[in-house]
Length: 171
Ligand SMILES: [Zn+2]
Image 1 (cartoon, rainbow, N blue to C red):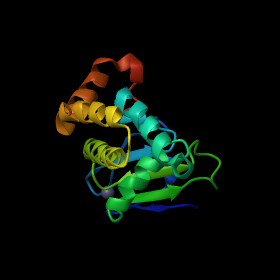
Image 2: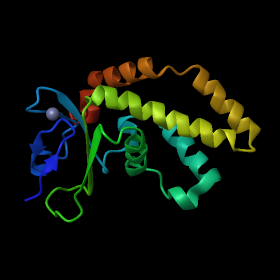
Image 3: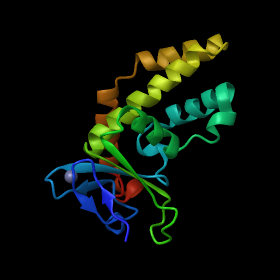
Image 4: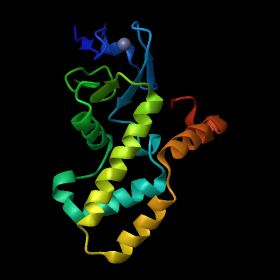
């Protein structure tokens, strides 16, 4: 049987994680953020960022990135937080409905902030290598109005106000 050893030291059976789960109440007493590769990027990012991300990746290095999705995003998170996030490869297990699972020591809220921070970082980096000055200034303008903490708070609140849109799937 597969067991996932969490960064906090607790082991869990991956079958406890169902597709709708976005946070795990752990035996260690903490809440841990849960992400699967089938989560849409809009779980964390507003549409405009997902769109610009697609464009940026296309103009910079689409060969390397392919279609940018949750696997890439969580790859970025793991680069910076290799001790805090654990990855479980579920491809071998046909019953789970996803092929990759990530669980973080921090809760879904903090994970959300980290994801937004890292994505903006790579976008800024990619933009700084772009020759398209219009795209660059357009992006800078959008970013100057963007506050990560406020965004995450509002984005999560907005979803709570529209429960029919998300059917309680997102935390
Ligand atoms: Zn734990």
